[in-house]
Length: 299
Image (cartoon, rainbow, N blue to C red; front, side, top):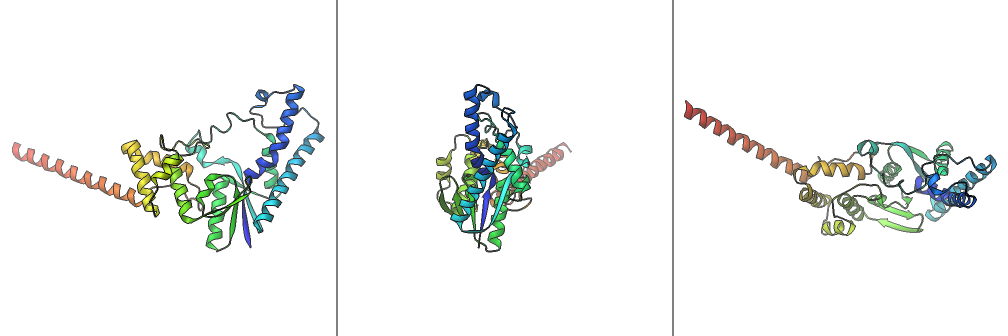
């Protein structure tokens, strides 16, 4: 009884990709549109008849059904949960340039939004309102773990490799098993390196190789957190926490509703805060003693 947890946005993009490429080629061959003309459009251009519109969308829908059927068969799934992005994502409020690079060079495929809506309307998928599909995928995985139900995550998104368990890469058609340890290292490496695909900066001059090298030898989360904090302090000094929070809030994929990134429960963060409090208390004590000495001398 395996639960298939699907990244719906990946499936929709795959289903709509080839039909739209063919239509772009047709546009260019007829000279009606060129690629610059089509940047930023959100609806299918009114260039061909409605019946051709319908046929094109039906082709995308059939592609989607075929992809889902193939994934279900290869994963031996008994049930499927699929999440689709919504227009609202709390990360956009945190960082206006979140995923900002993604659409600068691409022509928007108007078929994608239509098929997304159809998935939700037909009950194939749940719209991840206020979140990302990734959040729903991880929440469902955590629920499956809690109830000891086997699950497979189907996607191509490397971000989801922070989730322990079995993953199916839809494009490469390969399984990958992420242990609790591997998933942990992947997560903390992302906090160091950021994510160029999603326009998350991370630490300057820290890429995947350097991030993994830094985490070598870490055996638990506390060790990983110590490495991350020390590297942020090295790069940003006293401002380390605000930079870590800024990146962490974008990278962190929720395990449950209202599970937002924080460092307040990190032991190393608590220890540093305690040190600062101690230093502050000592400074105040010294200052008070000096003032008392001065007042006594004056008296």
